[in-house]
Length: 158
Image (tube, rainbow, N blue to C red; front, side, top):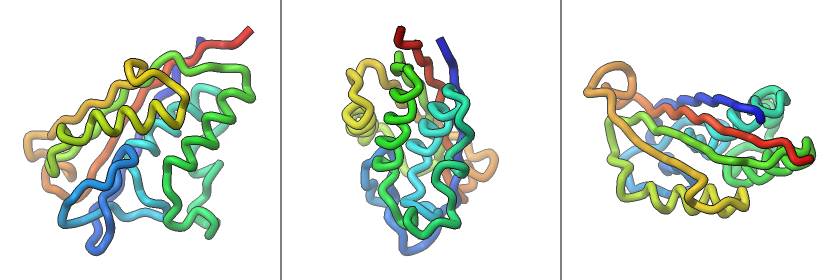
């Protein structure tokens, strides 16, 4: 078995869509980034890549490469699934958390879980997505951005 941990953060930016977990969330700002800045998917990608010891998201999908400009992060997640499989692992489960003062994530979490499970060929019960605020502390609490953390468990395929 292998465990991987991922973390990502993006600051808010005007005139961008807010995409989290592959869901377009109506909000006054989006997240700044080279891709669609899907902070949840990026943390899951880093956890998966870490578990198979293949670097990090910036190594595989550098922000200096224009082919990743504004790319849908779900496509990147699909590529990472291939890396996991090619290294003879299967995903046992994913546990993740979105840290944001606003907007509220609860209305979108079930769709996020479904999106992630679909791309990774998992049962939605294998994907946990939670959300929390920081009680107005830190950059998330000041509504400057959103962060996410994820932990994955992989099992070796024999």
